[in-house]
Image (cartoon, rainbow, N blue to C red; front, side, top):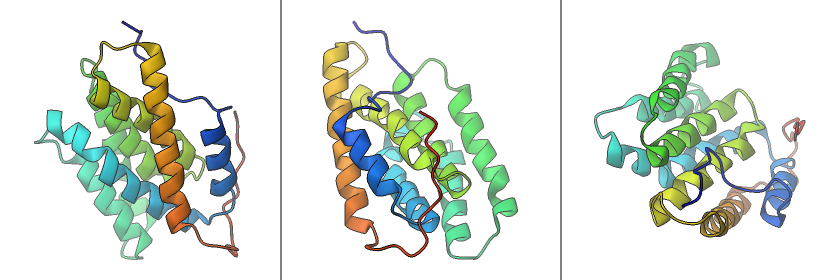
Length: 175
């Protein structure tokens, strides 16, 4: 059995390079909406399967949507973002749910930090791989599943991307 990692994916892979290039062309708002939607559609259910009574991640997603529609200000949603991050930190015995919670909380944090639009996908790739393959598979199979998930994320971002975005987010990759 491979040692389970918190994140899966290779920053130097073609999928990540393509994602980074596309992310750099999009506005902070476009990235925030995409990350929130993608995390809700792909990772929230993985978390809720194990913790159906925990609403912190759903609340964070709702708060982000309210921010993006102008109903709330960033300072108003910070408690929801903090609660989602705490939920992810407090899971220690379930790597699949923990990776999913980290993916969702990090996706929601894109509203503050646009570089999280790549970071959440590394957690998401782990959540996807562990959910799909279980927690006793090989590192090779996990890496293959991660590549698959990162490619899917790229394809989804491409669908919602804005051509010739007038105000792309200022991205400083520290990797």
